[in-house]
Length: 132
Image (cartoon, rainbow, N blue to C red; front, side):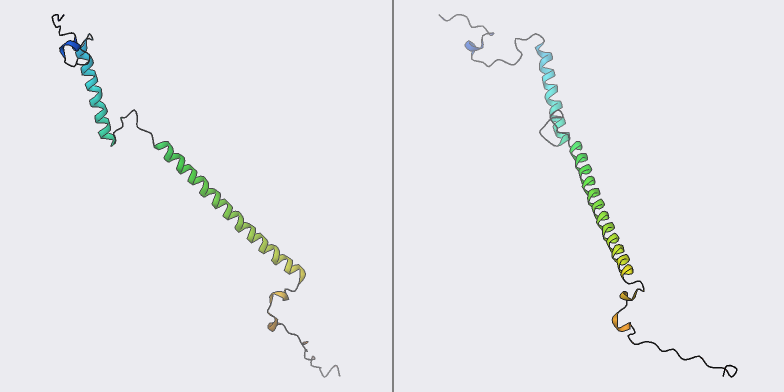
């Protein structure tokens, strides 16, 4: 029942087969796999992460989009503030113009204690001797 053990049969020999043992050019594949693994580890070290350069997410598009969004929001706030200031200035000018139309002498702008409420009497002109 027990026949001669062949080194190609791992189940009978009890040893674990090495990868690529039955593949032609196995040495080349082993070297390429090792090179790939080393390149991925080196890339992970360079990028400061366990991810490889293929898996690395790009952050620059998000940063640029954030900057553009902040710039748009800031510009909108500035435009709104300028519009409000212009509206206030226009309302102030409208009020001043309305006051000038209601009181053409501009006496409404003076405080009441400065207004003269008694009539002013002018001195009579001096009469010359020729007119008398």
